[in-house]
Length: 161
Image 1 (cartoon, rainbow, N blue to C red):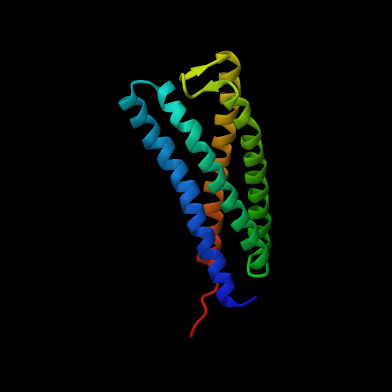
Image 2: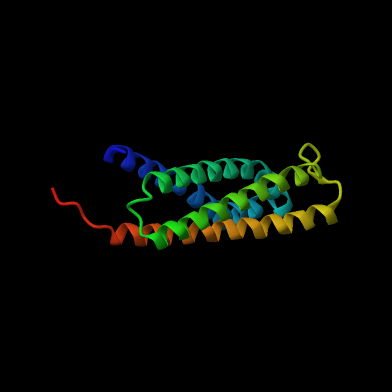
């Protein structure tokens, strides 16, 4: 593999990660509280989040794809520990994403955007609680990947020209 391809994949991975993880962090920590305040309720904000999370899941899928590609293409350059750790993280991220993609339509079935109503609130909030926990685990795995990746980058041998 050429050095250009390796660098291209790594830069694309970092952009994908920044969009997914950074967007996820910003949305959860800023947009949701501000939206709830401006709209007057977290329930109303939730109808916006219902749509936005589709895009977060797409960004997550692209990030996982790029992470897998980077792991494959740059496997020789990584220390065994980093490779195993990042592979485990990628698998964990994939399991989280699959769970979120499975749960999202179940919540969607209980929501009416037109009337801003929830048909079975007890069932919705039960699924929603699991969705939030899985999202939190996914976010934490993203932070762990970033720490592992940055440790690997900082310890990589510098190529002199």
